[in-house]
Amino acid sequence: MTTVRALLAVATMNGWFTTQMDVTNAFLHGDLEEDVYMSMPVGYSGISSRILVDSQGNNPSKNSTLVCKLTKSLYGLKKAPRQWFKNLSTSLGNSVTIVLVYVDDLLITGNNKGEIARIKKMLASHFHMKDLGSLRYFLGLEIDHTDQGIFISQKKYTTDLLREEGLLNVKPLKLPIDSHLKLSADKGTPLPDPARYQQLLGKLIYLTITRPDISFTVQLLSQFMHSPTSTHMQAVKRLLSYLAGTVSQGVLLASSSAAELAAYCDSDWAICPTTRRSTTSYCVLLGKSPLS
Image 1 (cartoon, helix red, strand yellow):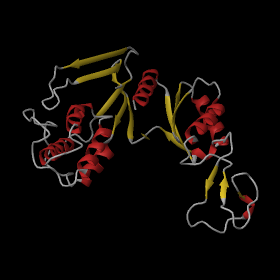
Image 2: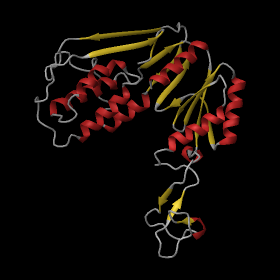
Image 3: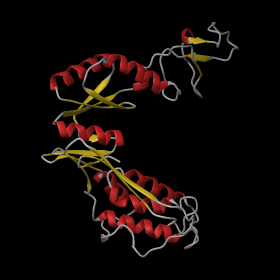
Image 4: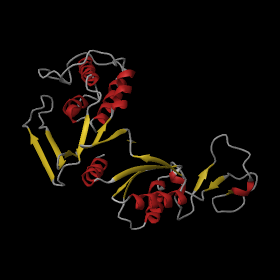
């Protein structure tokens, strides 16, 4: 996600056009460089004997164990992502247009719309792809282009999370956590099933991509993932109530910004009351745009 933010920050600073594509069955475009066999799927029968071979490549007898010899890469194969990326890289060539690849999702940007259109046409001729047009939604991030730059948010993600928890219309709170609250591992009653707490924290961790205002609270609550209590769950509910009033909040990657990298960090001394460890925070900016 840091790479995504960095690319979008550079694109908006330079006024580049951004677009995206999606590859259909991306891993099936990967060429295998050695023989790979797979066992037959459970319950699969009636397949033509022409494509069945044994592990030595010979036609099997009726009593042999049948396997499939792969002619292309396949989802679930460990080498599939590498083979697909190798094939894609070969097709792209040495263009100055930037193509960010996340498995089968492509974000394309550059300063020449004609070159971008040529690359998209070329990719579509090599792979079965969908042209999704101007960049609007990428990896769960909502992208809005404004005069000030590119605004990234997770409004739908936040709204869906609040709806699932029945807190969509709750009275919003002004702070994500009570500043006087001191959480510890033994505070509160242990939850009979910690899975729900863990799932909520997992979703909240993903939300910190565009919500640095909840990063501290989320990392604090994440310390109790292994054995959460009612007190920890109450703190999560408070955080969700805070989100109910800030659904549309996000991060602005400013267009009027110099491409200068700056990093800030802060550390306390043994502040954690449970582990007595120090807590370090950091922020990396490209001009006015927060990257990490």
